[in-house]
Length: 87
View 1 (cartoon, rainbow, N blue to C red):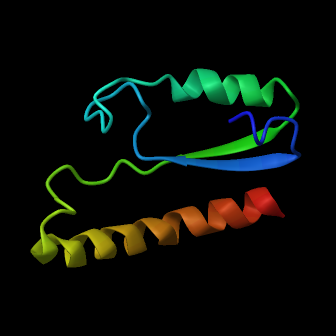
View 2 (view 1 turned 120 degrees about the vertical axis):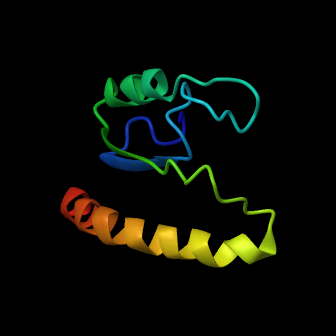
């Protein structure tokens, strides 16, 4: 986050909110606190939490297609938000 602090705008994409399981690193992270620190420098932040489906394993090649479809559908929702934020 230190890299974007002080920029005009930043888009931050995280897998989870950092406090709600599953924890991909095994350790909770306070993403919201970090984002508040960046915003305190005057940077406008758009935070997108991916929240991937928990019933899809990207380690299973048979499940990659449903994961890609899920991401594509999510992008339809997020793209207009990103466009508006970046404009």
